[in-house]
Length: 409
Image (cartoon, rainbow, N blue to C red; front, side, top):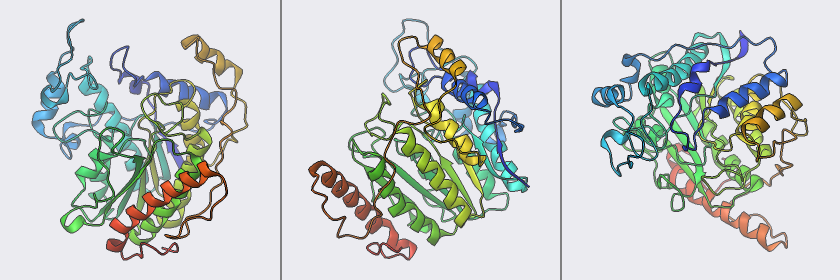
């Protein structure tokens, strides 16, 4: 069995909105270019995926919506975007682009191919950085997402030998589409760590959203305040995710690895560095090894720092999956810097693979909180994350048979 595979096709670059839209496919191209320049993909045969068929799209989406995507036509230049267009198609967030159905189907096909490689036993880990369209709803495009590749892949896995699937979403925005798809399904645990819904779209993902019916207790949400930095974010992650996974005992971990939590991201307000994001990916891999026999399906997601953030963060994601870790102090290759400088002449390319972020953190040790440090700002940030952790654990941990106030759980 191979350790990992990387799903890639240049057709991922066809998922392109308007020139002004913040989600630019070039972020994917720059990621693969950086990974190749660093020698990360030497000896790795990337897996080329076919577009998903309608049958698989119907696992999550309605037939009427799929047909609407097929038939949608781009607006004429100069036409104002409607506020509430049918099926969400043609809004400012989701403008119609040529061959939208085909491009979105390739994204789904990539995540399905990754799932199939793991399910077959050919690999333990698979990465498709083109995936992660976690906002798409059954009958609507939402948040730059046309088809929900992650939900489709989880549905497929449920029919191919898996009945305990954990989904961990570290995108700055709540993983609302995936949560909704499995909100009443006890076979799927969804965990989302995101900027507080009172401060960021889609304004969902409160701790009290815990699942419904038979699925009560299998939705976990940890909202963190604007300004949260690496050490506090990682303290929160480790206070919630490992315990929930230990209780749920997943057979596979699906990770949505959006990197719009970065301090330079233009659409959100967290303060993570590439170093902190790398630490999150390493933690996910370790949790998959510990609780899911190493099975880890990782996808991309949000991230709008096209040249400075996404390529470095997702190169670290690829390296983590391939067991070829790159140290954050590693210099970015000069040819790659020239490539991104030609694309964005006014944006200085990053010189190293990290930002010098602080990834050491104090483990959460119960409702008493960490001892005061004497640094008022640090103490306030620590109290904020501890308050969030306790609210999340009290809302959901008891339903998993855990003690919300015991740091050993």
